[in-house]
Amino acid sequence: MISIALYQPDIPQNAGNILRLAACLGLTAHVVGPAGFDISDRSLRRAGMDYLQMVDIVRHVDWNGFAAWRAANGGRLVLLTTRGATAYTDFAFAEDDILLFGRESAGVPDTVHQAADARLIVPMRPGLRSLNVASTAAMVAGEALRQTGGFAA
Image (cartoon, rainbow, N blue to C red; front, side, top):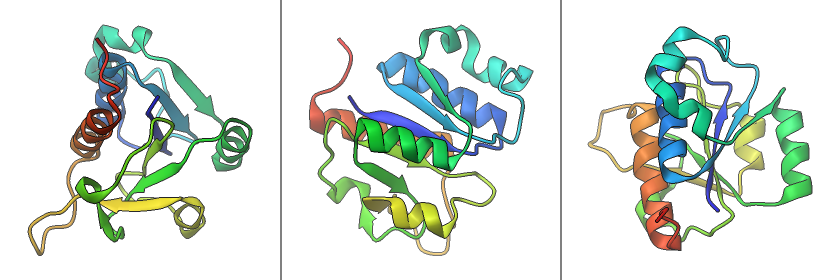
């Protein structure tokens, strides 16, 4: 099943929104620490509402912990990045893909870029930097689930 991973999220409202998305779509959510807020933050709970108790959240202390988990469990790492070369709409998703989203303020470091099996971009109008990470997560997760037939019944 497609899963979502948040790399050191730093805006609790966005993380809460993405966790709610994961709950509604039946996706596992990985949070790769350290986060820029306490995971019990009121803003996170407000955005995630009562859906947070319905999502399978796997917490990883840091990138090395996540990388070790992935080495043991598999899954292709698909990074969404403004430095990507392939549009997410032109990519063939697989059922075990892990959709990785970086920090809102800084993305991911080069070591994470290099670890990714694919680096995708959301096509946008020239001159604009990026979409909100929660909007991007919804768009890309929807396409990945559409392609793999993974929408919850």
